[in-house]
Image (tube, rainbow, N blue to C red):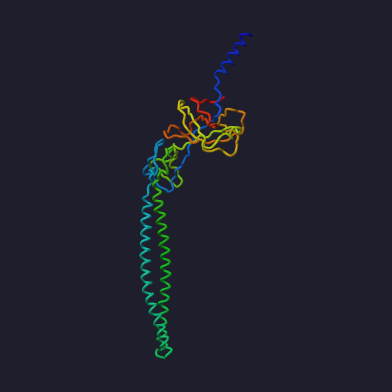
Length: 311
């Protein structure tokens, strides 16, 4: 019995000795996975891939070319549309010139009609001559009205043709797909020579300098967490290094503990999500990495030399 007691006592002592120390007062612990805001780049026009600069894991600069699609068909249609615009402008100019001529003729006919009406009242001209002058005035007035309508119609057709040419120019420009930001190519969705249609996924980008870590803290301690509070993160790939971060966002509503999160207190059911903004200018952190984090809620407590995962 004495041997059994000694073995039990030794085992318990060894268990207590190997337990990690308690977390220092003034700090909160949480764990999760590093996440990045993924940006899906998709094709907006149809075309075959003529050039691609996509390399998974490579960094691309803002406004750098990712993929170039075949634009020959759009370029041909754009040339036809521009020629149609030029033809309509020429036609419109011709109508404008004719309108100016007929307006002058109408002004002359109007003066003649007034003069011959006065002469007819005095009995100097015949009724037939007055009718002739009246017909000339009526013809000029009708021609001016018709030309006004033609100028307006041609102007509207020109505007429509110009908008169609602009749309074709936009589609032609969209065939060259550029990066909207400085980012890393997380995945490429198309290869050289493949046909891209509208909404085809071209690439998935992620900004490695704007990574986040979402941890879940028990409801009883969430009141200690403040926005912009300093924190540190450690990943298994760099066990001797701590990455600086800050509290970016705190969820406003509690939720049940996610299944993929290992909470220190297994009996806790309701937790709050806390998003930490990571400093990753060196690019060591990657999306998907499991990470431990410590949040300093008491500014009067200095950071310890070594942070521990609590019991």
